[in-house]
Amino acid sequence: MSHRLPRVIALIPARSGSKRLPDKNIRPLAGHPLIAYTVSAALASHVFSDVVISTDSEKYAGIAENYGASVPFMRPARFAEDFSPDIEWVEYTLRRLADEGREYEFFSILRPTSPFRMPETIQRAWQAFSSQEGVDSLRAVERCSQHPGKMWVVRGNRMLPLLPFGPPKQPWHSSQYPSLPEVYVQNASLEIARTAVVFEDGTIAGNVIMPFFTKDYEGFDLNTDYDWGLAEHLVKTGKARLPDIRHASV
Image (cartoon, one colour):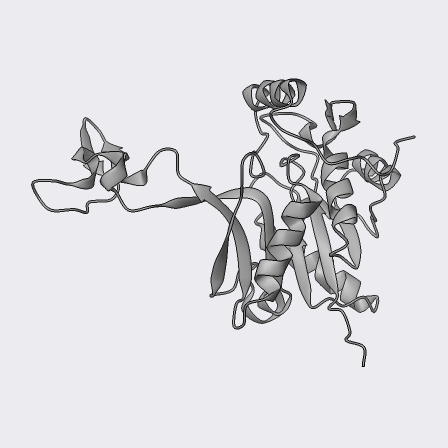
């Protein structure tokens, strides 16, 4: 008896209006545009029924298609602003695809700014998510390098601890890092969720969220010139590995 594989779509957001690092999604890294590494990792993972780019740029669309991704339609400008929430373009994309008869049980958001996310990273995340019951979504996280227990909110010339926890004589902001509870921060490398959370709850995460612990540089996020220089250094020195490019640009 054969078992039907679930339909899972990879959604790769690539709007063109980045302010901190203009055209970062197509900026060359080690000989290929940044977006090529996410497309190649998604395709090589063999997790997805389709790998779809959501972009407002014809130029970006052409580059992504050269590396094997699909761009069935362009993202409307109103969903590609600096402060446009993810739920807007995700819902728009999934609804338009559904109207065309292309429905999916699960979706994954793979952002191009995480080039060191490997096919094995995606496979590990999917295996973890699909093995759990009652979970709405999975989100990549890593251990905080700076603990929020030592962060402050400044009001004029006074400060208040962001997290006012711990005993009065030994608050978290005055405690050694090893004594503080483990805290994790999300990174941009990947998210997986049931499509139902978009249509039924109007969110991309739902209410029951499980962690996916990234390793080494899997969660590295490229958003500034400093990040870019560091990424180039990591590649040049062999400290981090990029996914193999399976589709050559033309």
